[in-house]
Image 1 (spheres, rainbow, N blue to C red):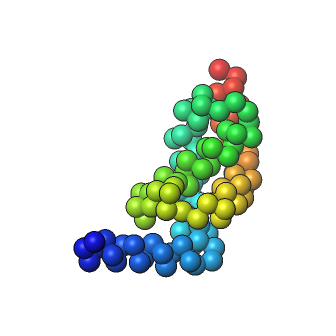
Image 2: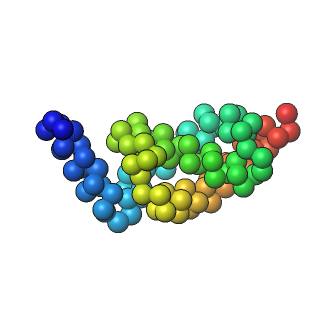
Length: 106
């Protein structure tokens, strides 16, 4: 393992050990923008509103984590991610419901 890979691994470990991991890293304005970008594809891949709501928010969060921190889903703390995605999907309930209805009524 070269020095750059070692540094990246150590930084990821330090990031994962911090409390409120996602709260410190995910800009909710970015999440809101990505909801509409991913809505159509997510709609056709899900079977219920609750699944759509969760999956849509998950895609936005994981996209931000990958783009900003080069961390894929396998690098993220699973339980904290689930809790954060659920919390954020509730924050954007109106927007998500509007997007769901837009594709549901077409």
